[in-house]
Amino acid sequence: MGIGLGIVLLVIGLVFALGVVEIPDLDQYVATETLGWILVAVGALAIVLALVMNKQRGESKHVVEQRRIE
Image (tube, rainbow, N blue to C red; front, side, top):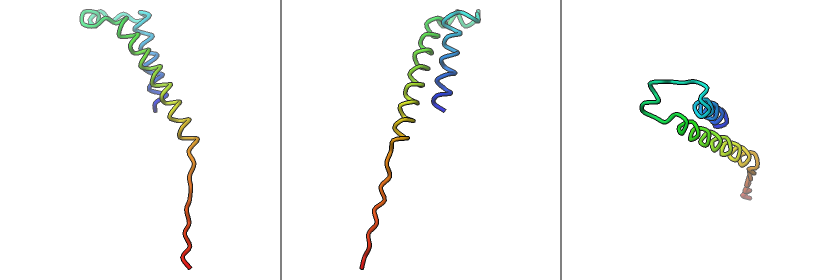
């Protein structure tokens, strides 16, 4: 889920930052270019963190301890 969310945020951020789609009502309240670059940074961070978490999860070791009572 983390990688997918990062990609979505990255794409939406690039759309706002590069001005691909103009939303006239939104420009009155929020600077869309700044919002776009913030979403790009958050999306890239989400992708990096998801990859790091998946790498750590794959390298875990499981130890089974057995005690025999005689």
